[in-house]
Image (tube, rainbow, N blue to C red):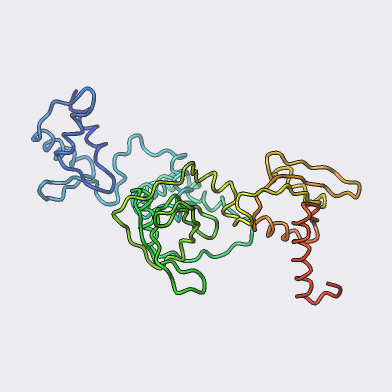
Length: 335
């Protein structure tokens, strides 16, 4: 292969936030099909030559490590187009708190480059794009609880490397208890981040609020194997984040909505097999099978007088009792 092709491969091998040695470069070149026939001295000369035209640096150590200069975006061929730049800006705006710190460090030069690309467009019009796109929660927005940075770093590391970690977990009103956790995944349920995992060598799946960890330490032990058949998406779909009322149980709800309130359920149904039927009194009966969760109850109560639980009877009585107690709280006569 010619020199240009070899240089191309060398540049692609240099990591964005780490260093690589000549020995490692040679090993990777030899693994390419067809393999490169080269020498250590040739690679060293290549790197010195490339340094004249690319933001490369070496640490001067033995063995010598090569890396991209701080602030550079690494090998960027072809250049970042407008669509890619917009994507990076939206990712920076809305995903920054979801990404681990080391991922953000790697992405930082690309975010900076995206700012530059958008700023250099005609009159810089696209530079203000993120200000024209907003994500608005349907529920009352709450400020997120603070998660200790070291806890977040350890949890991400444990997830990536399939390792256990130990941490001091403090439930409300408690002094704290040390847990040994095998993480299975993270779930962002605004404004709280939940860790899904198992504790010690048990197989029952636990849901732990990340902000309640006062400390965390990565362990050398491998994580316990996930429970048989465990799938994070299925776990979420089962209603776990809505806080189980009765684990795994589903309710065939029958809800009578005012026409205006029921309208949004035609576009965003409660379930795939939801049924809506107009009633003689003008209301709409919505029937669906949903997970039996506390979130379901909060959702129903949030509609106030615009919804009536028609079934099941147990849920109707439960909601009725909550409303009765609320009436007493507000001093409503006859409650």
